[in-house]
Image (cartoon, rainbow, N blue to C red; front, side, top):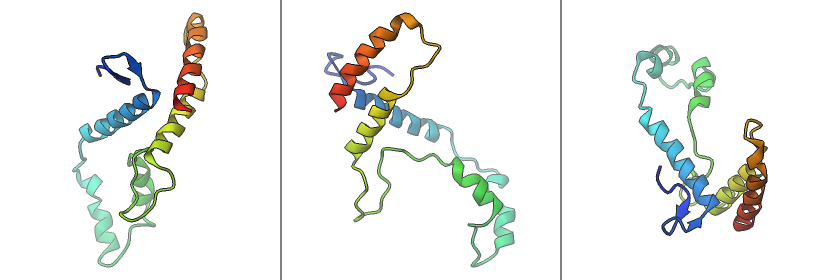
Length: 128
């Protein structure tokens, strides 16, 4: 993606914009994955088994499949009128700081670690 996380013709960088854009890209990956319309995905056998007025909460298929749904960690999914625990800005800030503080991949060339550490300090100041 061109200009990922930068603004003003690449004269300004925003760590939060990196996180935001990455979240949007993750969302697009899910959408591009399509919808599984197979008989197995629609769980017709489970629907027949549960029957009218039944529920699916204790079905093995529910317990297996509910974890496969992707939900954004930063976009709010609360209902109208509900006040979310954290604002969008707070969620972006928390996720950005967590990524900055995360351990560095051990496979990274050690010669760039000092440069990376310097950038991390600058980015943390931008976010805080």
